[in-house]
Length: 418
Image (tube, rainbow, N blue to C red; front, side, top):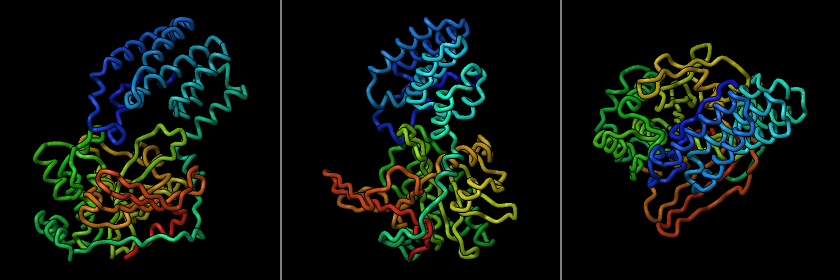
């Protein structure tokens, strides 16, 4: 029964999915009920009492099924964890039919810890069974992130679908000029080469405000000046997307081409709402895109100390080539970022598919009335949803149009554009 953690609901709260009006999940009565039920199910496991375990699990599911959709997403971890614990209990007493049914339920609700399942000694009686091997393979297809990424390696350089060109505002833009002068970005950048300047600005953005991935910031105008002022005046944290917007516009203000890059998992079960947003900046000195992550103060190098792009990092994860994170990479100046957790697990999961705004400019993603916002997505060939080539979604109240294009051509996606 390895790694049987009683998952707290708050760790499963995903701000990008839950509406800004959602209540604090820790105040929901189900949270305390599920905690207690989890302890009791753990005790039934310790006593090898399958009848009591099933009774407790049935009661938990009855209460869970009364929740609304948002709360089901928040509290799913309790269900996942306890179905898994119950399957372990059945396995220990060699009740295979019930054990496989419970394990299948755990997977249905999101169990994805492939390494733990494969190594769990509770399933010793099951490990030669074809049904157990089938379920392990099923978990691997959603929970072994490097394996999933390796299967998604292939793009299609012959994909000729017509796409608009990426564009970038330069320092002649009045808003970017004001941003550069207001925050003294030339002084922040220093007098070194492009790489050192880009890293100095990365650190400045990282240290200007905190990241908060569990709560909506409430910032409506999505531009660097407003994000900085709102966050500092209200003493609030911001999302990874808001950090990336700020860094992106700072890089544009310095005269560099830069993008926000939304990084997402495959998520074939459609239960993983976690994703990450980082930056790609094209540095003239290096003549290449470079990975910059303001949430984690992170950039990546190879064994020759060369800064790497997002595409290069993705390829190196797939091929198990050396990757090195800067020593001062961290989250909120509290938690050190390690390669194992950041690249091998988190970004291996979230580098499956990507998209970027078509236009990299000041305030591009603020959803003002009658505005059109366009994105281009890069999909690997094994992604299960390849069409339509172009989609349009118009808000009936604001008339904001969101347009999305898809491509399998990584060369086109990473072209420098105009």
